[in-house]
Length: 200
Image (cartoon, rainbow, N blue to C red):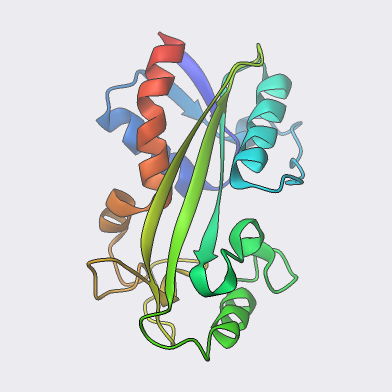
């Protein structure tokens, strides 16, 4: 069976992609970066989701000698000209401080009226081979921002994001429901046939 590396140490992402690949019948053994302790974190110096995803995928493919997948994602708010975008995880300055990031964003859009609070989560997933071959796909989930956090199932900006057609935030939805419509789920599902073709 072909082995594939997902460029993350996030167990949740690995489980999600394994489930999607199994659903689409792609016979592949997926491992995360924990299987390669010598591979360090790759600096996300790109100016777009695609650039960052490709940076990580190529670095891991080169270091591991195996095909590698990486993704980059974030929240893009219409009233903030698409920001925080690639800076979503470090919007407040400290990387990964979900509460500080969320509080800052809520403050920045506090004067934005109802009906003008549209936003979308964007994800670009990249597949890179040790040969240098690359493939990218994108996924998005559109919705709007509410004024106070609701729900505990999600992370990041999930507690203030309501997808189109929903009344719940993504933090109020069960994981399987969120996976079915999420930006990352859509990107990974779009990548599955590419993986099947490349590894055939």
